[in-house]
Length: 206
Image 1 (tube, rainbow, N blue to C red):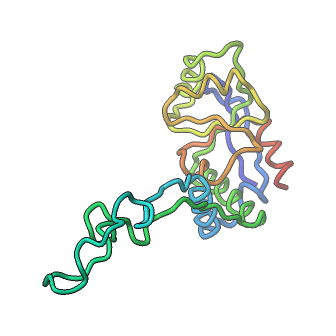
Image 2 (image 1 turned 30 degrees about the vertical axis):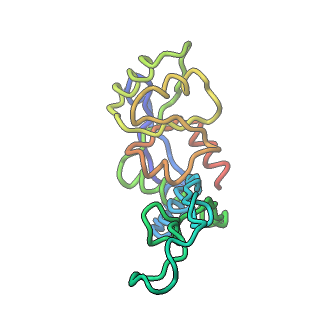
């Protein structure tokens, strides 16, 4: 059972935390993580790109020149794909890139990502994380104390003061246990998580 230091907001060690083996010490499945990241990125695509076909561009109703006798190649419309300002052949049209993966694969990928953080010593557990007011400087100070720059901060429950104090800091994102995903875990170098959030993850994903 992996153990990590428990720190306070000043960055001082106040104890240790034992992490569940079935979540933070599983066999890392790189293929599962790859599939889930691809799925996440595909689902973020808007799919609004669009080009006009020859029937949608303006003009081209008249045949440019007669079929035979000019010495030139036969043409039916000046808006055919081979013409400048002509329609686009086989171009992109609005579509959805979304597709689904089964929950079991997503869970395997999430546990693999969490395990990766533990193996690389890129997880920091805080005994508590709370502010009396919304102030970016407060969160910046905490990150400075624990020597972290690029981090995913995971909370057990909604905490507006912490979440709003985090949003203006570059390369730092605040998330909740029920919204964490494999992509964010791999994107941000360090996982900063509260002890309460660890307990909730172990309860949800047991």
